[in-house]
Length: 197
Image (tube, rainbow, N blue to C red; front, side):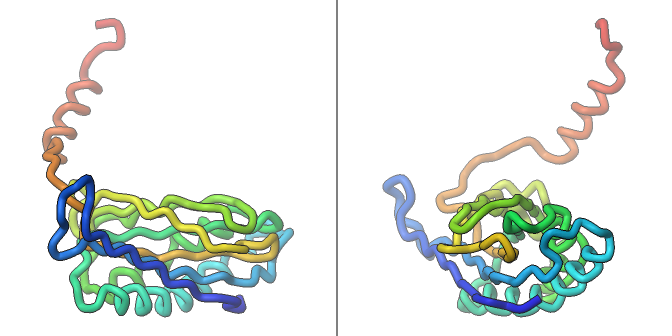
């Protein structure tokens, strides 16, 4: 896949809801606009190419994202993809769910948690909310956030927009949610309760 454009989006949040954020919260996303040589084809052979390319391009996007953090340590990560209208949604899924996670984890030497990722089809200027989650703990509430991404003019019908994102945490985060253990116990209780009870 040819890289047609690379976009780097940085959000540096100094104030949120009237509260000063010090140091500022950072969200960064590196986005690659790629030519889709297999547009119009939904054959399984196209997926292997997408998986291989996601790893190669993912390394580049990860480096750009982490450079934009300026040495700050991320506590959240995410990924996303928008497939142009002539492409197959499964091509995008193959790009974000199979190998790119290795690139995202290797660069920070962390990442026990599942990397949130979503894929959609769309035209030029379409937006996607990249979901951000905790790097080593999927239940890290301060890391849970989103970053809205759109690249003007992309993806065209014959393009794919691939996104890698990191963040230093949700601005002014202060909620306390249920622990994983609490939720597991709750769900186990639900499963053991008869339907008509």
